[in-house]
Length: 388
Image (cartoon, rainbow, N blue to C red):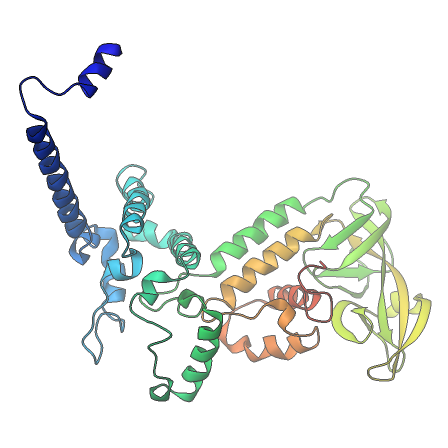
């Protein structure tokens, strides 16, 4: 080690220090030039689309406005996927090595069919990366400060002014701008399947449970008997008794004092539906208290009912259901634009807000009710995201 250290410190007896410095400089310059040319070649669209699994992506991109437009300005692959700064370029190339690994080694995406199967996963990674970088690749061409809002449509100018004020990520509103959107249902429906497996049998001796799905309510412990109501998704029940595959539960909530009073809500004056009741279950309801909603002067009764349900599709914790609903919200509403924070609207306001968007998403009735319940329970007047 000492000899090596001396050789590093002691000038060469054969060559001058100047010669060594010049050789070192030449090597350094050669290395920089070689790296630059390497980056140049590896950053071309031709190189990016040289893998056959990229041909479909190239076909999608070639139909987009980034490929052909009135101004004749084309955004190449690296303009969107690779930062302009040198550290960013190096980091992106290192990350891209994983794609080569999965193409040539694991075979995870080595065919168009396999790529399509993993499109959602791959797209989410790109969106997350762009979000973490505040969409700096987009903003290297598109600057909020350089936009002339008078040349935009009224709606575009309104939205872009809001986006500029918040310095929003471009990718929040412009997913699918250059490539087809993946099947957004794949992620949250897989999550639901996992929750279904977990909820097949609830924990023994659980005192509080939450419904993952809609469930029939029975007045007796016979699941083949008369149905006397529905327990709606993401609703809390208290377990009173177990009998075979059945649970006797207690459900409390609010009913309007006037009218038939069949829909139980979680909050007084807010249409956050918990259950519907009729028949014997309705007949045996217990009145806990009565109150008048000061906002509407409507009288509400706080009641409790007891009913039997099957054990399946029940979880001991509400949070996994909220996580699933949050994933659904991100996949459906955030796919086309920046969806508002759940605390943006009131619980009742979310009913019309979600209904207005129903033409643009494809959710089952149960999925829609779960999503609405999540938004309402995290709304402006129910405590926001921090309360639940």
